[in-house]
Image (cartoon, rainbow, N blue to C red; front, side):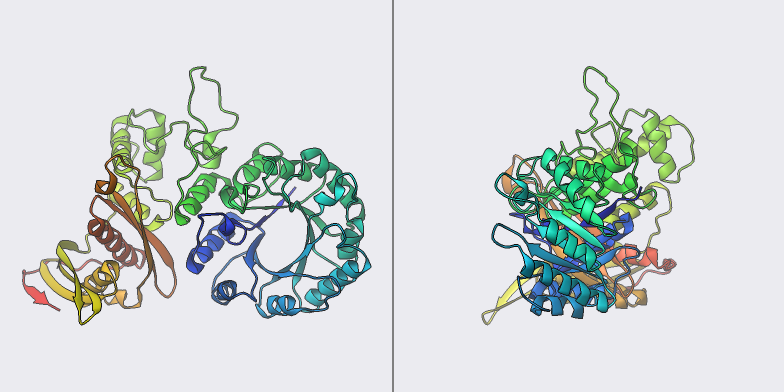
Length: 511
């Protein structure tokens, strides 16, 4: 049975304390989720400033089978309010109608409002999803479940009815009872669950809801969300496919689950949880009892060894060598490949969020990396003049046998270095003209030497067709910036299959 995933990472997930996602980060997450095969991506409230930009930018994205959902909160007695009009104007293929239920906030007015809003959405040719937020709170002693609202949504043609646990305090037995009761009146509408983790059972609640007939599960990657978080998409998707026999992601995408978890953690600048079920670094560590893991770690993109690379050279080394496209020449050569990966990891390199840098690593290890240029020297000056500040970057690069020298001004060191590098290279590689730096961010790595420790810089770049991320790691911030920028330029040339310039007589040019 197919279980549809309704992902709310870029909305609910970004409301967790300390979690911040730019508009471009949210779009990257949406694209990654679409590749994974989620059914719905909650995009936010188009009537709000920041969320409106998401829907404008999303029109240029190819999300495949995933449907971007615009949200609108309903109010009793309201007919086609401002939020609903904004959601319809956004162009999103689906609209999530949030109904904040509670004691004293139910009855005929609510049912009429729900029916009217669902019909308005359907008249525009969009899919209508109704989220009854607070549904399970009404089941507790002294209250009754909102079956009238479920029935009103179903009769008016809602595609999905999400039963929400606003307080996050529902227990699995309450969820089982609520879903079973709602299933009896939901008709042809798909029933879904939106659990929060305030009682620590959001994943369990999501799974028991499926067992009782729910076919849609709302969740966020890594369980990010306000207060105690939301249901974690990662163990939910793994359990649905590996334990319950359902299909939650696109074929073959379950093996990318660990990569997805680490990718989103990197974007929100949080360390991945070592003990996260299925994908954490310690999830499959072999203990002294040597018990077999409850699932094959490779099914979710993880491994028994806690590190990416194992230098001992057992069969895991051969698997990595095959993945790199290297000839299967034996355990010794494969273990050398893994030793290099392990050395990079110890320096602080992590490639989640920097897929382009990892692509270049694989090309290098497979002997397929091209020599486009080399940075021979660079200098960055921060200048203040007449109460104004600017940054000047000077670079010297070698292309073929020619040495090139360029100077550029920018706003900060990353921007100045980026402009100087491309100014030096654009004569030989005009393909760089449509490439632009989108954003950069830096993060100090865990260390016991304070500010003398290493720093990781992530850079996002784009051209007219693609976006990609690169990374640099060094105990010098400028060096890490330069690494990431060089990778970004080299990846652009490699992905466009540009031929390196041939070597010729050395001469020096300035730009």
